[in-house]
Every structure is written in structure tokens, then in C-alpha cells.
Image (cartoon, rainbow, N blue to C red; front, side):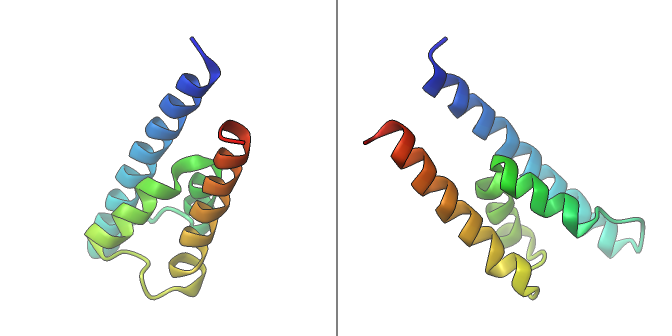
Length: 90
């Protein structure tokens, strides 16, 4: 399988996982239960799940008041977009 296809599957899987974790963490917050550490959430974004986590932030209204998320997730997404552009389209 070509590397761009593998990368696409990897990013899709990580985005789906980040979206699910975002929703689960929001549910845990509402139920006053044990939460996912912020460090873990940001790590999921940095590893490629930023699109899914960003969608989860918007859909679940989760972590939208914290600057490290409302500024950090789009910054990570932008950096990853630039990296993908450099790797595959230049």
C-alpha cells in the first residue's frame, strides 16, 4: 500500500479516536467522574488527531474556554497541514 494511503488511514483513525475521547471526556465531566488528562488530549492532537478533536470541541462544546485548547488545537492542525503539504505536494 502506498505511503500516502497509509498516512491517510492513520490520520483518519487517530481523528476518529480523538473525537471519541473528546465526547467521552465531556460525558465524564458531566457525570463528575474521572477525566482524561489534558496532556493526553493534547498528545492525541499532536499525533494527528487534531481534526477529530477540533470537531469534537465544536460538537460537544468541550474545552472551548481553555486557551491551550481553543488556540492550541487549531495551531497543531495548521502545523500538520503545512507538514503534509510539504511532504506530498511540493
